[in-house]
Length: 248
Image (cartoon, rainbow, N blue to C red):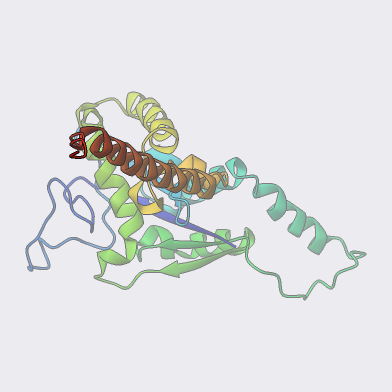
């Protein structure tokens, strides 16, 4: 079962894992919140909801909108399901249940297509969102109220995006912001090495190339260490002074 996380972009805080503009006060009004729904500073009236894979850290998609409702959540997850090839599985389940002659019983319990991990914001807990998730065979798990570290993955994503691509904060046109986020997502997934998955790209980890890359890296480090030791041993041998001739 896949594990996905959803969250909305924030400007006032930078995430539970630290970064620029992180709030550190203990006052509830200044401490990091578990369900932040602020925006990029250049587009204060535009919100961004993002879906990412918790296991591989791949940033799957985002939705830029002037509203923060369950509609944006449904659009984001529908787009993510389609991009990951899971929408066909959801449709196949509906077809199997609608077909009375299906060989499998209708009441047979099925494993969810994926688990959606999110905060307790109204967009994720509304009745419309719950109905949509149930229709798509998506199970939901909510973080603890007042505990932003339960959303560390998505918080870390936003903090790194804003730190590594600061030009996003200067964009004032939502259309330009949408296009730039699409470009940043490609760079984040295919170029930037992620520390949380062993310094490989999220795309490599998502496509199953991560273990092979990490094994090759470890093998290369072992060979480099062996060659370095052999080199220094040869150098010490060459530097040894010649032995004096035997006395007659």
